[in-house]
Length: 451
Image (cartoon, rainbow, N blue to C red; front, side):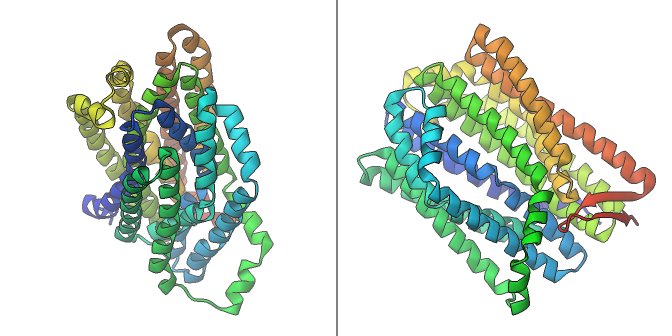
């Protein structure tokens, strides 16, 4: 039976691991901000949007791998569990290699769409070029981490992510002193750490795999890859709308001036920290929901959602209090520039609202990942983007950057509300009929009778 203790034993390494991912971006921002070069801060912020766009489009490589692996293990199907690693890993390296092959059009398109200040173009070009060569390994790490999470090996996941991020932080501080161009130093540090993080993760994975001629034949099954991509279509669409919002948010901020763009970049790093904290709780739900589905246990499903909501509530209270009490110190941590600190103070209040409106989305995305049903997640992002667009059109011309942040919070609230309602409808159908229909790795519709 799922208990608060068993949930926490899975959740806390995932929370810490997830927390460490945006923490790296925070360190990048702090290091860049303390150079006093606002153009460099803006260039790194724009570069981060580009890679969020490229990598998050394929975030399903991690999300679906963890869900499908947990389901396969719930069925005690070890072959399916291993193929849940191999197939997405092949996709990750094919996609990453194509990013490198199309480096120039990707880079120049991003600069054309996002760079409004010509003085930033050179730095953005350097950042994108340097980072893109590590793309196959960055995407491969998504798969490795998802597979380990699906196995419940969350401490190993924590060790890999923290190890990679500590390395990145060390290289950031070293390279920014070593290179005359701080943007080039940050980009190279991140690229090297992405390659080494994948290698570190593979050390934990390869000893648990078996290799055979039959497995090679299975890997060459083109239909299986098409099926896998079809299953993940909804997650891909979900990510497209998420990134459209993030890119538009950054572009709108850039139009308000370099200082506002820099302030938004710093505040958005705080938002990432909060979101990844909640995402760790969601990933714990993915593991336990996936096991419940594999074991056909209605009680385990219900209990997992209840405990996840409890953890979410206390996290929201704690984070909001911390952000309120320590806001001065948090802002000073990022920059000593008085003008920039004043701009951040102007918009800081919106970050205090984010945990209240955005946390539920992280939990319920984890629930639906465990169910193997991404359609409600996709729909929630579509609804949220429509709301974001309406609010931007109505408010940004009137109140500028405040309107951008209000639109973002409306986006987050819509996303959370849509997922809560979708899960409630799903649960009512699930429990009233004592059956569950869900998408699995082979994309077949199956009905599972619950205990």
